[in-house]
Image (cartoon, rainbow, N blue to C red):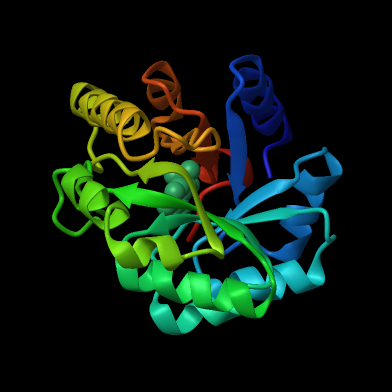
Length: 221
Ligand SMILES: *Cc1c(COP(=O)(O)O)cnc(C)c1O
């Protein structure tokens, strides 16, 4: 764990009103405890069972964010523990989260993942898909999920101009959704974009939440 780096990123994000999600995936409990001891309370994981196991082992005032691709049959593991799911990329997943949240008498906050990268392999909706499904009748039946914003991942590239363009595109999509289908939703306000390699560009382009792993915890093997 890199304490100085963590503290400097924390100061930088706080000054800008940006939420810092410390991405602890693959890292042991002790590493998370060390960052927790410095005051960090928001952690991100990308595997459902790992999130569940860590949530059970660590203090209850941690906010656990699911940031990775989520399969339908894994939603049950995180439903009692998760405070924000960043990676809703299909209507069927949202439906399952709604079902499991209701079973636990919870309302789970979620972000809609938007496809902004050039890579086909990345997941996510297009803006048009979001507009269409929000207007569907069955969408209004989802009482146990609350959509509070969008998430995006830029193309994995050294081309900073390209990365900036993709973040700017997500900001525009967020603004358009906010002005149209989510017009009456005051809590639709999160733009989750930016990781260790590109979080500063993301903040310049309007990110309100960054997901930083390796800069804080060291590289993953
Ligand atoms: C792993 C991961 C991150 C953090 O990546 P770093 O480059 O280590 O900061 C952010 N977002 C998602 C979706 C991830 O899977």
